[in-house]
Length: 185
Image (cartoon, rainbow, N blue to C red; front, side):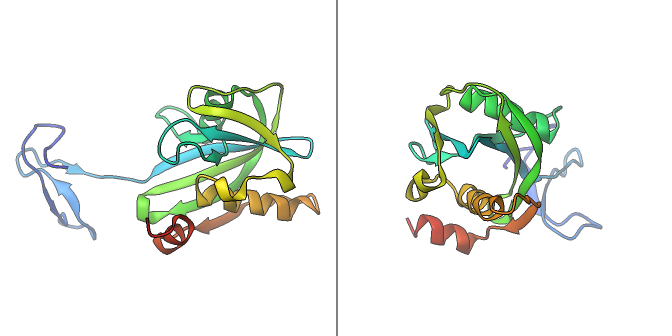
């Protein structure tokens, strides 16, 4: 950030009085620009024994498989965001059961919130998906998953499915985890 979005003057990066971390500060109008993590909301849509995945049509990770998910918008709940993203990416309506994975990615300022859901009808590729398909566990394209959050969610699901108990899984993905997943490229 170089300029204040309130008055247009140059900002500086410093710790405001009474705070404990650096923020962008405008000395002209006194605005402190707080930047907070972005929430990615999505679903783990299930139909019988199969899981719905979308092949990404957009960067990042274009051509790789993911669960339908995306950034939450203002004025919507996390459940509404997850349902909207599923409709947008997979043209699918779902019955949401509850939050299943909450994964913190502090190194990129994101929090993933994936909800377990049942498909409530058909599906198809939305504008952000090249294709959408249902997969049995042995068919999951593990080497072609877009993000470590998706792999972690799917692994929890298949581990939990055996006893039919689906607790909330809270975890972190660090910069080291991410590098291990994507490689050094």
